[in-house]
Length: 189
Image (cartoon, rainbow, N blue to C red; front, side):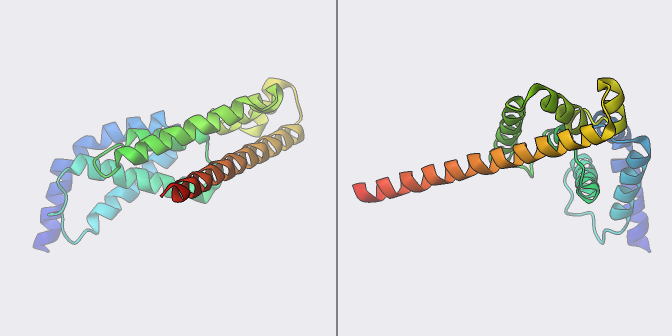
């Protein structure tokens, strides 16, 4: 019981003051107010179940990381994740646990997706951008572009399929180049 009181006091003193910053960050990441409440509440529940807090050097970073992980898990469950949201989550939570290599790889992947997106036909690119990056609903896009929701859905499907195929193709080409480079170096020895 004494340990629970100590953890509760620690949460009140070291974590609660960071809640407004976490809420602002989540709002900037286009998370709905209801989902913000859910993520923050779940984070507090996780903190309350900790057996010890002695391993936590930076309560603010720990709280942000907990919220980030809960949000990523929630977004994965929804299966419709705006591209920019996941990139922003990674960049905004750049604490000591993320290596510079990881952050660079994330930024490069994001740039690659945006480059592929730019190669789509104009209408398809605009629809995918509105849905996946801006987070608009099918209905909002249909009204904005004077199209049917079915046409919007089809364009999103075609755009995402083209993005996925271009990503796989680029990854295969990079892998073939690495294999060729490795085999050419093997011949030099």
